[in-house]
Length: 261
Length: 270
Image (cartoon, rainbow over all chains, first blue to last red):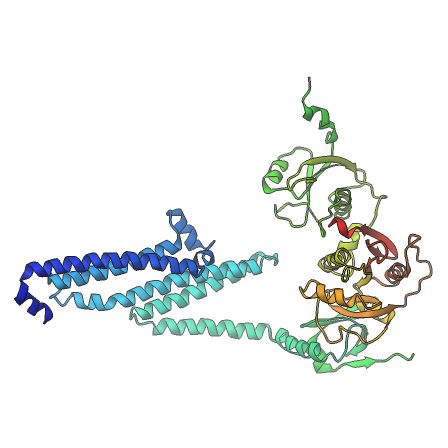
């Protein structure tokens, strides 16, 4: 409408000039958005947070940094939008209905890409963190745990990104729910005794019905308490030290033995 | 004409084992290429992934102490046998290795300093933390005044049964462990109270203000040390604990195990 009225007043030359101005402004805006974005990301400490991740290593080999790549990406999004708007004003090809879905689809694509990138970064970060925490565990098989953590996060990010793009992900979500559910169930079943021991241990530590140095009898085990931690109680008798799980302490009860002075 | 390496080269001529103290990764790489000489790394952390490794629990500013600890550790771990000729390369003035010396592994010259950390009931990390607390306390004192303190580490159940409280226990129902950041301050405050600190195998502070009642017969400690050291020596003879004492009179930190004085450190040097 506006374009049509403008057209009547000024003719196509003005339209082309306006399109050119819009495009140049768009380029400028894109550049500025990129720069500001880079500053903000740096101020948020993103460059330090991604240090050592595989994404950063790949980008580094290409001679750039993650922060710069993300900033460039936002710049390019603005450039593309500016170009499309300029084309619309110049009325080159925009009349064909083919362009509209593409244009309206663009924000979703941007969000999906950002989610995916964030997912990859966070996944890498979590993998590094978990493997660092497990470094003192000298068991080769333990390297599965950080991998599992990483791919779980990648899977979530992938699902969110696909959902953002409007792909039907219901089946994938079901698969994911089954995966998470089975992990939870297996953990609960496998660590049942540890969990009950820990719950009992918290009670024992808070209430301290017996302390280090007391003579106690737990079931058949009588001796002097040497140590109480969250999971077990160490009871030392002549020549032997019983390591009693705390859930047994609660289940069987404790006898405090007072020696005659 | 001869060059310096030829002159001093016989220091390491014919050694069986080379002890490297805190080597850098590149230095260790070069050392592994040596022929006919086993290489043992002695450091606080095994940063170079050495196969033969002896962990230093403390920094040991005194190089003599450090080397003695390394040799005893290597002997106890079995990477060195009695009578081996040892070369030792260690940092003395800088952070990189800048000195070489030679010694002989001798089983009879056994001070037990390695056993104190590695083969005690308490965990090595706990004993190290207690040492650090005692050294810190010795250096700073309480409000500028020198203080004394006695820590009994490990076998806490037995120690508690061989002692009695002097008053209520400030650590009752608390769950602080040595090595927690707040502990330095707490111990500094409570060191004003007389009596011993009792610390469990895993580092939990069980009690302070404890009067130790071990049987003192047969305890032989160097003459001139006071009642606190006597109590420390005696309790380690009666139980499987180790005792770490900060002397109020001369400011030294001493460690006792099995009733014997094992290690003596000057806090001012750390």
